[in-house]
Length: 450
Image (cartoon, rainbow, N blue to C red; front, side, top):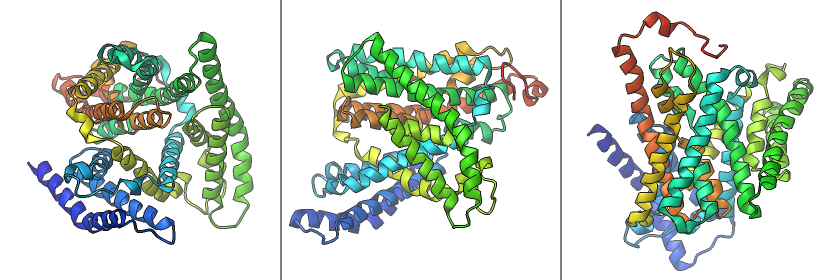
């Protein structure tokens, strides 16, 4: 009841602040008004997007849900204002601006850069056999299940659509899981180490699969040689950029540390991000692959000058502005009228079931007797922001339409909502069964060198 009250309160706040803007935008669209400065409509769109992001994010945080869900849901609300008001208002033109689209693309690059910064190559080398197997199974099983479920429900869609839906199900948003583990003081359990270790490998494998699938869709060629070529290109780029970056990063850091100009550290970080993203595009890969690789190799230790904050701290303000634009824009692109089609609901429920069952198969990779296979599988369910990135790329290259995109968004929302309470239940269930607390509290190897 309290959550419902909070939701309506947030909607009312959004309406109070956004209604004048909506009315103004609607009148301009009706009267054909134009601005002398082309940035003015972009500013109006950004005001609405950022307002929706923060109001929605705050609401869902109070509901103990990730802020990204609030950004997505409130994006859906403002993106369907024409439908929800019976045609009284329409300002979709504000969000079709090339400027907002570029900001959203920059936002997703910053997001992957941040994910790379928070990952650690040394930890990737120490995840152990359990984490590696969990990651492999957690990618392969959902992709196969997603492909066949899609083929069964929408056989007329074609191979590329089925393949991309399967690829979307491989994603894992471990940030939500990590938060639950931290809140329950379970980060030191073997399940937590396996999940967090597998998530790093999962990110890399997911990006490689995304590159492979995009290459197949764009080229229109499906053959062993084309798959081998794209796979080799992805692996060579990631491994090569990491090796070169590890060698080059300390040298660049030492050089930058000698400079006294203000802001050189963050500028250098973003130059590194842009160069790696551009090179990824030149190699035929998604720019986000380069962004992830840039974050992975850019170590703050390389900057010997401690006058400025860590890179993660420096990019936080930009992260808070640009990343929500991407997620709200993803919500705006969801057309609620497609949900009136029972077939779309069937697709959404089908791929949701495939995504949950596929990730549960992760438990088969657990080689630690003290770890709960059920808990590990549940910890890998949430798709969150990573799934949205996959869906956004699919829509960008034209492989999925509005209806399939909407079904994927429903799947992402459902898996992100059910994962935290299920994980909490699974972990506390173990405590209720009188597991040996001393064993749980102490670090265990279990294929992981912590």
